Length: 79
Image (tube, rainbow, N blue to C red):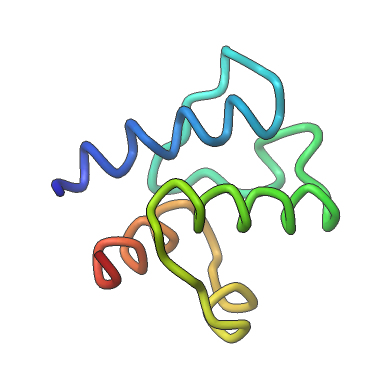
């Protein structure tokens, strides 16, 4: 799977989790960029991403992700 394909799937997941069809994520997107992205939604988001890609993030990976680009990098390593 290419990085572009990962971002296409991530866009779908983010739109579903936050119920906002206008969301488009990129390498530098953070929780500050999405209005409803709080700690509770972060848990929902991680679960949805894991389900979509058939992977599991470690707690350390979840805690150290600084942006969606880092999330995509981890996804690409795991698939």
